[in-house]
Length: 77
Image 1 (cartoon, one colour):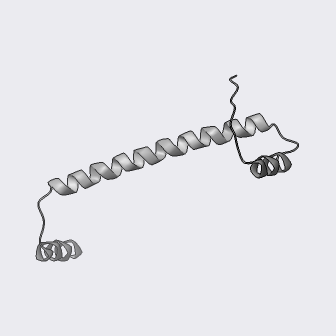
Image 2 (spheres, rainbow, N blue to C red):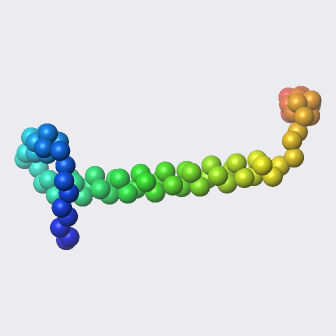
């Protein structure tokens, strides 16, 4: 196990200690840190996916509204 040292506002420290008084605070902080890492990775993956979609859109030729309407009518039968 590693030891970390963070500075946090005193009111947050007190609220955390009060809220989790009877729990393993190290385990809670480790879980929160893990969640933060996972959230950041997911955010980066979403951004990468959005960029890929936008790149594909920029490479496609525009389709006229009449062609889109025609395709809709054909699919409706």
